[in-house]
Length: 236
Ligand SMILES: [Zn+2]
Image (tube, rainbow, N blue to C red; front, side, top):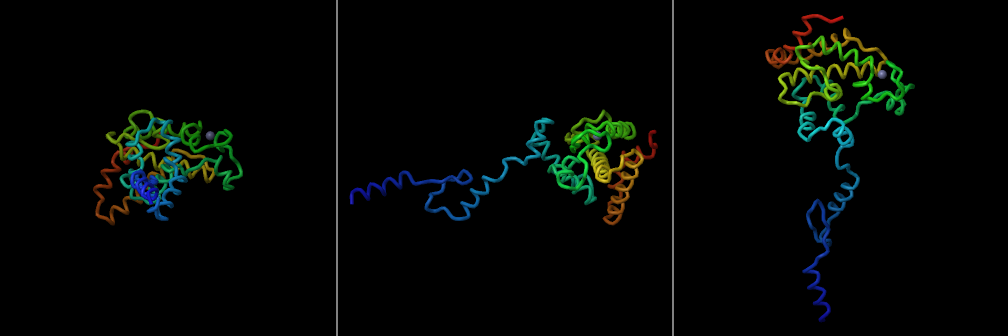
């Protein structure tokens, strides 16, 4: 009798606890749902793998990531551009290295410069052919891109929300990235003229959407700088 009492006292003072999401739960009261949560936590990444890989490369802060994740709806009304941006920030865009692994392409080399194992990063920031295109972009849109573009801007976008041209810059960068990406998929060499026609194409798409939503004025104020660059002409 005495020893039972002793055990009861022990259990009250020191119940067997399990910590689920930092909350102590008496082990006798644990439900299936709690165990499920615990198991799920073990297989979930602490941080999205693409984010943990890219964060040290560009010294990105949590605020920078918030900016990157929240921009698609701010930048564009085109669902294609939005979904491309979402795939970009989730690390779901690939160079030939991965496209070859997935069985989508026969070659893993960069078809533009023959570098082996073309990654998405190579395509956006390293490939000499694409670097020439970026140079033309910097010259052709000098009123949007006041300084030479950084690798971060080329690969992911401008994360400085105080930048005067934040929207126009990121919208343009997004169209350029998508154009380069699709040229690579189709094994076409991207050209500045081809890019310009894409920019015009997306401007028209957004214009049509704005006309239906009675927001044409907002459309032109967003596109003003880009359209001004286009009217100056195409550099050779
Ligand atoms: Zn290349």
